[in-house]
Image (cartoon, rainbow, N blue to C red; front, side, top):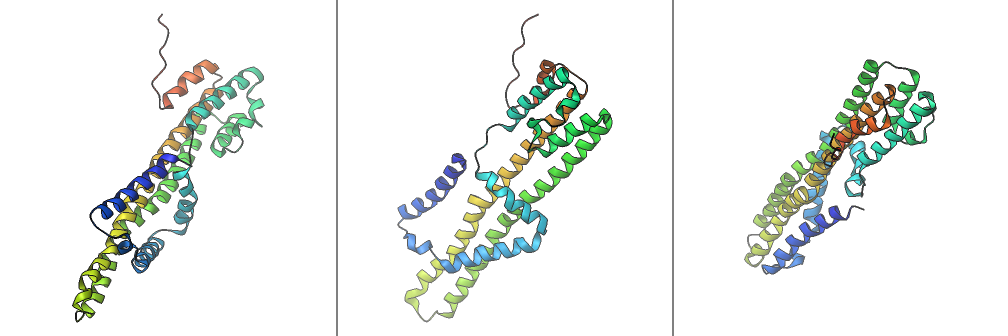
Length: 255
């Protein structure tokens, strides 16, 4: 679990609830199941209608990544590629065919398989670049599902408020209930805006950021595979790939 993401949700929701309470509000006043049903159900329905099935399914699969703790995939990939380059120089490129470093990493497996098969450098770059761009487009479309839902939620909140006001207008004869009725009507707006800005849009933004980080790792794999194909020294491979890391370059010794 990514504690920072969890902390963000707790702080955001907590600030709203505490602020409401400090202003003299009652927490029971914002616990309205009917308003929640209108906002959540309406947002879900509109999102399902506006997004392709494949994007929704991929978005659901990606959702856990927004709350999962990750160490740096770029650092791990750098270590693996340097190790593979050392094996290739020592035992030949064919020794990488069943490399354990590539297991569970389809893009790395694809790259190394073409290196082992003797695909020329230009063709290899074209194959990997096409795979990278298609993967990027698919994952960005999946992340956009949450952005789309975040756009619908406030509108559904307004619809919920209007529905609530309609009920208030139908009961104008009961003046004692007007104030509480109007307050309840606007709870739906709070739900819509809150869900959009505290949950859906932040998730969409985080997933987009993670997709771009994944692209950088795949670009590293591409350059690493080409370097291995060229038979470069592992130290040269490491220097060539270190530019993809989120860290300052290492100082070089003075000549």
